[in-house]
Length: 590
Ligand SMILES: [Zn+2]
Image (cartoon, rainbow, N blue to C red; front, side, top):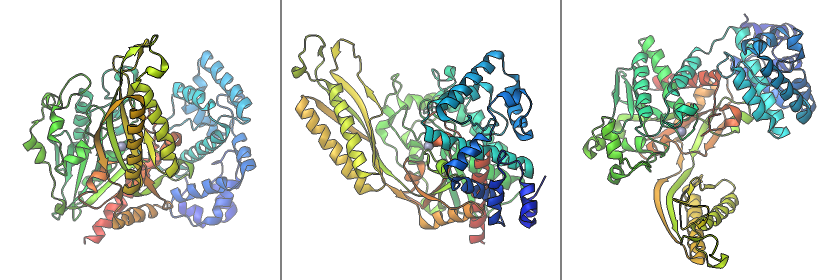
């Protein structure tokens, strides 16, 4: 075991010796990074080495990749792997492959080599460091074989950095205990999934289903175990955990626990569990801050079962559309019935009582997985959000005329689906014009359609977003005008119903600065970025100052997808950053 102090104090050659074996057969990387000593943290050392690789140029990068052994390859069989690789491939159980698995991996190795000209690199110890299953390894291998070459080169380097991260943990005797705790909470919570998805081992938790209620119950139990003073389920299904402070004010934090269909385990939930891990630390130390911490696990953010996006966080603002109670889900169950079934009061009085007095709060902070590729691409674990893009969502219907697909001539059709298709293509080019606007028709349905009937009716959704309100409104106006003219030309009648309108939400400068300080104190470079996705913080933004922290996602940051992932090392840094934020607030309030 070595320490950072040793690395900082040693001569260059001694220090290089201490860091030997990190990058497979490539000691030059650690050697060059050592020029940047002293390092304040292992995170800083990691980033310094990743920068050396990033700046080394393509030839050196390929050389580094080619220095790695094939997965379950000849070197493993002949036992000529480095000690580090033997340990990693062994942990992943690659030595115990069935003959079929072994043959499959050999085929994949060969195909991969032909396509990319270098071996397939995967951090087989995985996001928790405990080893991927052989099944996961083979799936990943097959998926990555389809990637373009440039992407795969970058992905190989990212996997190498992850391998190094785990080797560093071993060298320094570091265990990301809080990151592991949060990671395990996330895995355990992902066991609950709605019927139809649970069977396929897909994660879907929509508002007030049985899986949703089980998830709430699990979060409540976790909060009690952490040592929160008060844990309640509120009238809309939010889980509220309070850890009292010595003063009257509260820091509000949290995120959502509902998911999209077949979504990821981290979206929303990371922002619940990260502050919970901090409260657990505080409670274990019997430490009270000059302010209380209120962690809210929001019941509804994604707007999946009902058109009621941000229902959970909106309720804290006293915003609840009474008409929502009568709204039916796809099975005809009203929200009122769903609430009653969940044992909630389902009355407007109880819901309006959830409104918070902003004067009682210091502000709102939210930790969230990035849901994009940026942090992954620049080898940074954390990012500080500068602003959340504004957006609008509509549920729409286009009505034309259903008619015989064989007998209706093309020039006499009133095809509702074709009209929406035309709109989708318009949105594609109109949003691209802005550079940073985005527009999506994510739902497109021909209810009761048949193969031999011209679509008479089409249900579709609209999702339009931009970094500021004016740009969002201009985009929306153009899309609506296009819908009108397309429909007029095609003899279609369209209706649009606004289901969400969220203003762009720039971070409150003092709170953004607190996150920056919290991240800088970890020795991690401060990186500022806007949020393309909407978050609960957008809602709280309307009544109190807010700022968000992003955590890098694996698999190029993919989200709203089961491949969404984060490492327990990155989560550890997020917990530490949150702890730093709390410590900083503590000092400010002394
Ligand atoms: Zn989310």
